[in-house]
Image (cartoon, rainbow, N blue to C red):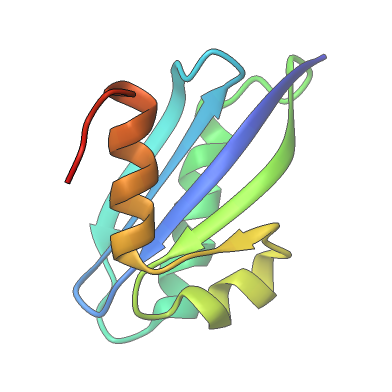
Length: 102
C-alpha cells in the first residue's frame, strides 16, 4: 500500500483539498464553496476525494489543514499539522524552489 497525504484549506469562501503521494504527485483534488458551513464543506470534500482514490492502493498517513477554520477542521479530521496561510505558502514554495529567499 502506498503512503499518501491529505491537505485541506478551509476558508470562509472556499474549501480546497488535495491528496498527494510520496513524490508530491497529485492523486485527488477538490475545490468547492464553503457556503458558511465549514464542517459540511469538508465532509463533501472528503466524499469527493474518496471517489477519486483507489482505497486499496493508497493509505493516508498524514493530514494538514490551513485556512480560517484550520483548527476546527484539524480537530475534526485528526490533522498532524495545522498551519496558517503564510507558513503554508512558505513551505510550499520552498518545496518547489529550495533556493528561494524572501
